[in-house]
Length: 510
Image (cartoon, rainbow, N blue to C red; front, side, top):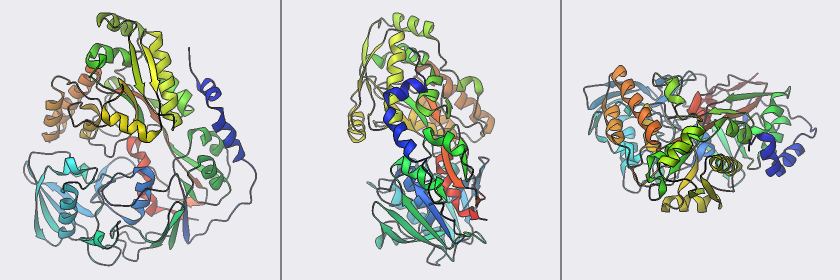
């Protein structure tokens, strides 16, 4: 059975009916040049620094915070609060800070950075970069704006780590008085109404001259995607995040709105539990060869995405290899041969997903249908999202549908998704090893020579194709929409595109 968008819409027709309501004519609200109005996909659970609170939470955080390093729209890693970030031997980096201030007017200093690093490394910090930051053995302060980072082992990935969108630099001790601390971003938070939105005022101390161009910013949460689309088409907001794929065609045709998309944003993939039949690499490889990925792109994401047939690598980096990027290509005959070789013909496996989010649910349905065609029977377990995460952390299910992204373009960033020997978590494979993979990843992290590093990660990607600890399915397009009057809108490329809110400090209204 070939599943396309029309087939899936018959299964989930309710969402289409709801969207149609958003197209009714409404009075158009004139945009103000003084206030940036943002329609947000959900109200963040919190704004605590260093913790991964999701794309919406990071967008809000980026209005009040800045980072040592950052990516440009063309994917180049550059200094943000850091004036320079230079290697000093194999285990040392010298960092010089720009003349920047926090929103309370005090300077950003080496002591502030040291404090942030120590807070992240602390036991129980909950910081998403804690495991990586533990490699920083010592911060040696040279002067107020210069410090050395000493690492336990050579670490070529360290500069990119400081561009991670959940590694903001805040003023030392500022979390003692407010959870989100004091940042060095373009705005300061003046009011928060739980479940509704946030109000901000421009920081007079922002280090980028002439920015922000707005005196204020207002963020309103529209958890209902149809209301969020209706808000931008009515002119009630200037920009919205997380444009639903089902609404992209509609917004492209709206004369008052500009749709901004990147096809290769976050992505869907499968992880495997080696405690059962997927201990056998042949069966994992058979799954990867049995899936027609373009049907996921078309059926789940309305054609707004791209096929993912290997380890996610950005085409803006030297680590992208077109052949390896498509190593998990549809080949049902080879899949059947591998299943037969493994003695697993007619095997029944359980696929863990969730019914709460359509992209997870519909992806699971497509995978189930495709595997039936090669002789693998799939039962679906699709509880609510919270239960699904709990079950995944417990190691339940033979394999699972996943949807994630990457925070940086360093090739080491994918390690957390492809290495099943890392600590068990719901979003990666477990209970088996890929011969030589962990050692290669460590070797790549410690290698500074670009050509040698490229060769190492090519070997990594070949191992992933052969042993399938990660089964890529599809990229899903990242979408933002803004009124035509909004100028200087830029998006970050590829997998980091969901974090494009980091560039909102440059926006203006004509």
